[in-house]
Length: 437
Image (tube, rainbow, N blue to C red; front, side, top):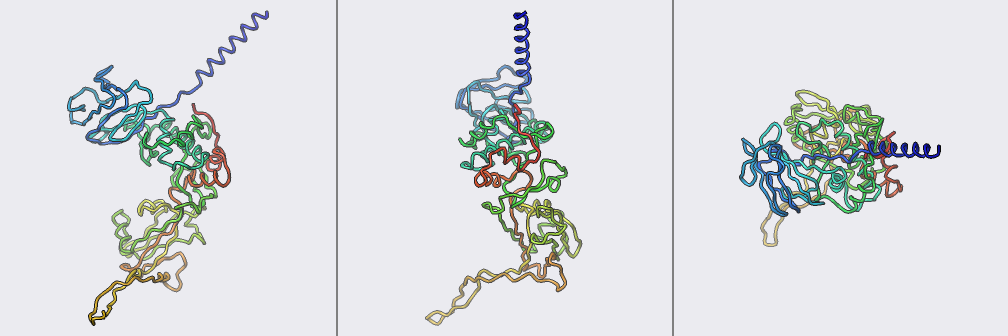
């Protein structure tokens, strides 16, 4: 009887172990699109490597460590060092542990894949790399070495969650043959060149951990600084995501948060016309002040709608549109219109010899106060002299403002002594942090 009970117990333990093994997810392999439309690519490796195609396996050729090859695009296929090969996709593999590839003078882990660029001439270069090693090359580009460890850990989890979310949807770069690009369109990825020891430590300390909402990895948006308040997702994009609600932030006085950008009224007219938003001669801009916000601003203070009037037409543009059109750091801004004042004056000076010379004398003149009609509301900013007036955009924050502020995370870690889980739960409401693999 005892023997039978022990056997049953043993079987249950084995079955439980097998279930755990089956359920454990492997670390995902990320396919990162490094470049598109390349006419040629120079590749080398720190270890011996082989070249394969889907038509010529197991190996088309082998190369020694340090030996470089030139892969070129041709109308009828690819060549390596001028020699044609069959197949539409080229795989570069190495059996050497911790190999480093050098592609166009930049270093990468993992493997390299080269294929024709979809929809146009040239080659697409893809880095196939494990998720954790991918993150090594993300953190070094997103935040600076030396930031607090807890802020770096929060960034690692946010970047991991964001990548898993995009890979799960699978539609951002599916037609291009990879999961994620290496630019701000996805996440800025610098490969092995961007790695830093403390960033690797942050990734390792949070290995596999991601933020989830309703059982799915979240779209963990992040940005440089919010200017004092993050934004609801639907005010920037169309989707109202429950975990991306605006919150009061601690980064209003963060380094580089405040900014100013100036345009002459005439150059602003021209720029709007070039971007298909021309109004003719610019007459006025209407926007309530950050100190007395109206319905034209969101709860965070960002511009919801800006009214622009010209002699040909008027139009309404969102803060997101203005940020894109004028390359503004954020959509959290005020507007002023002032008359241009000279920084120096031409003066005639009589020398001791009785001759007169022209000199430029620097001056410091106060910008004249904004003027308009006596009955104008404070939200109206009129252009009186288009050739002389200057439109000034004063703002705070850098980036779209949705999700985690990187500077806010740093300050929460430094001043509030938040751990990375607290930072993430502050910026992403209602999430669960758990192992993805």
